[in-house]
Image 1 (cartoon, rainbow, N blue to C red):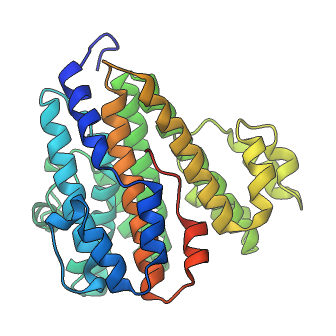
Image 2: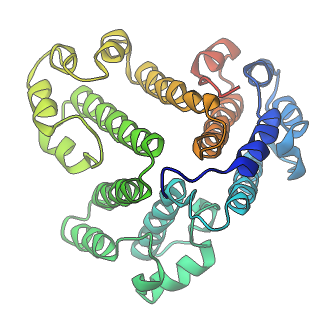
Length: 325
């Protein structure tokens, strides 16, 4: 995507669509609902209500269908570009991981597959059975085979996740570079850095060896590997991580626990995404709208999951992320 392309119709369209994004107030109302059913009713009064479900436990179906419709609608705004594909790769890689585990464990994991990838679910199932990687351009076939081989050797399903997470971020990084859009490249690099920082914190807290971090570390970020290695050796990693672009965030939240740090990372990403509000013709607002919808969906998942597990409303509200509007 050349930098000088402009998309006035697409940007005007997503500006209109932004009016239907859920506000923080609406999410707080859902968090304060007395029951999961009441929270579901509040959600049904929004754009998600076009895909009604009767049982609060089926809320994920509403989210997935709505997100898939969103991806399709946005893609139609710029039909000549594969603008949103980069944000769908995670769904493709989630599904290929599910299919690998399904094959290995001889189970039916259909309910774990998600909509909204670049490859329709049933088509991916067929292509995977045939090992037809040529027809799955978003999927690194060599990584799939490596994941299967490592599992056969170790009987450890963690390798399936780590190998394919690396492949997913490599695909996103390559696509971001190809797009030549600074906003997208910055977002992908931030996402990779935050993913690695969270992994480092988790591995450290679990007192696992540094090799566990190396296996899970994803490509595409700006933080050098030697910085992670030096930080891991310290009792207080923050002293080293202060050298990075996220030093302030690490200082403020890393010692508060994983949940607080994860939320802080998500909020930092959203603050960056909000910079697209000041663009008027270039594709940044289109990309930002997709990311806004995904963050919105994440917040709904947090609320509904907590409601179904009878978690206190005040705790739920603490976990809800910043939103675009």
